[in-house]
Image (cartoon, rainbow, N blue to C red; front, side):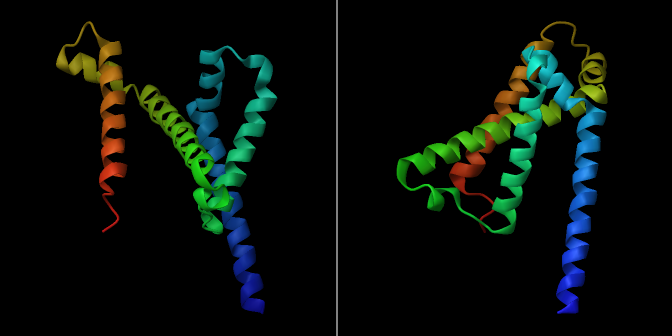
Length: 146
């Protein structure tokens, strides 16, 4: 019994540490402020906070309890919810990647090294389309399900 209590305390404390690190990284990279600036929605900061909290809680529940969204919401509604969840996760992860690339100046250095003067927006679009195509192939071919 004491071992379970100890493991619970360690797990709870580890969760606090990890979440603090993630929030610090989000603030350091400016992901949320960048999203707010791009979408011109500064008046709805509370909605961003609520969405981040809801996403963290949903992610925790799905991870800890291994809930399958299609089993919880039956039929086509479940599949639509799963697709919508995937789209939102893709946007979020893409935002993280772009924020990180922006912070470490990947694109200016890359363009300067390869002599690219025009078409940087096309380069970013090509990278996004390549990432999307790779992800779709990964999920369609079920790679990694060994």
